Amino acid sequence: MTAPIENFRHNPGLLARIGESLPTLGTRNLDLSVMLALLFFAFNIAQYWGNWAVDLSAYYYAGHFYDLGRFDQIYAGPPQIIGPQMPAAWVAAVAQSGHAGEQTYPFIYLPWVAAVLAPISRWFSPMTVMNAVVILNSALMTASIFLAWRIVAPKRTPLWLWTLVSVALLLTSSTSVLALSLGQVQILVFFLCLVAFERYRAGAFWLAGVALAVAAAIKITPAAFAIIFLWDRNWRALLGLAGTLALFAAFSLLVVGLPLHRQYFAIMDTLNNQIFIALLAYSVEGFAYQVADLVQGTAQVITTNEYIYAKPLWIELLAKGLFLGGLLFTWLATRRLAVETRMPRQLLALSILVPVTAPLGWVHYFLLTAYLLPALLDILESRLAVALIGGFGVLLGAQTMANMIWPGMRFMPTIMACVPFLLVLFATLLAFGRADARQPAPRKGEFAPAA
Image 1 (cartoon, rainbow, N blue to C red):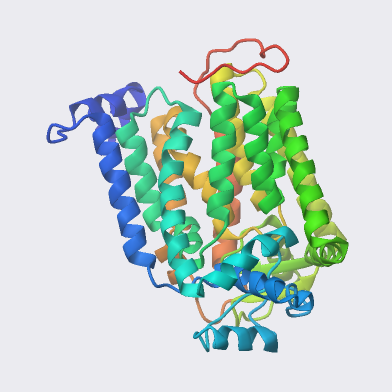
Image 2: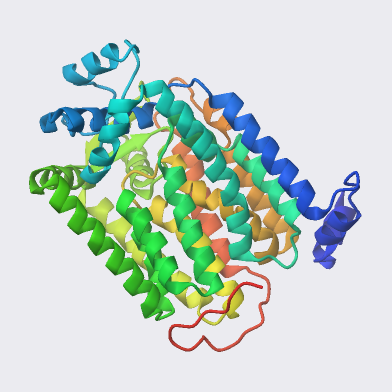
């Protein structure tokens, strides 16, 4: 069993040579990749067609109430913000649209999104919208495989292998399975993030800033990735980002008005003051709270999938300190890398750091990590890369998630297993990379375009 491992260790180009010798029934490398991608696309449509997408329903009915002028119902929900409890008006609206008994969750997104969804909710039924989004999300997820490959521009991983690893991960990972089944807008958000950094690598800095701004206007968190522009002192990308966000803000205030924005930011403040612990939420905050509960002997038997507690100050400081320390570590570990490898590694590191230190840390927030994960085959030695990709595939696998719900536990095993793994993955990709060709950082505002 050790011979193949030794071959991988001493022959870094072995995977590429395997790809060149693979029988492909006369197809080229690109043809095999496209075939795999099309199969992935078709499978997802068949799998999720006609599925009631719970998260997408929140957008739909928020748009419905905006269209009716019932602004008091847009952010209606339980006092703790997140939860399955449905306001009576939402229950009635779901029933009136022919889906009585279906679940929706509260709308906790920027109010301009509800305004944009208003005419869609007027013209189309919920299931029509959900099926259309299945096609859209499947297409975006498929395209994201190739965008991630262009960002990384791997030298050791042929396109067919990148696509094969990506499809295998995305078919089985809870990051993608949950995002598709819920109709998550996160798929669009991360697609835009990938467009931003693919354009950034190609030298289209203004467009990179615009694309990242659109992603951040849908969900605020992607704005954190702008730290890469700042590290590179790329003012064109930063101005593109700032200008586009300013336009979105002006549009939102003019069209929607101030009161709904106040409600939204009040909701965000409430969420930031809570510890949210769930089977599929992997944040340092939830992990630290459960560890402290076990150490103090105050942990209760888990009887439901979600718990919400007031956030202690020490947990907030821990999460923020870890985030800032992670940013510093990322910069120190990558600032002297060759220009063509620095940004992809920074983006992969931040795709882990940002959600794991955020208050919620939903598993689908790590979808961007899943897209970029095949880059480990180039970043790390082969054995370590395969082990980490395999670990991600197993621990964050949809089947593993289903099997890790055990009765009588005083902690959530998914959180206790996945959060440490994600932190190890973050540290390893920064600390144990292959020896890269070192060169001085580029001049201000420069980036080498992709080959």
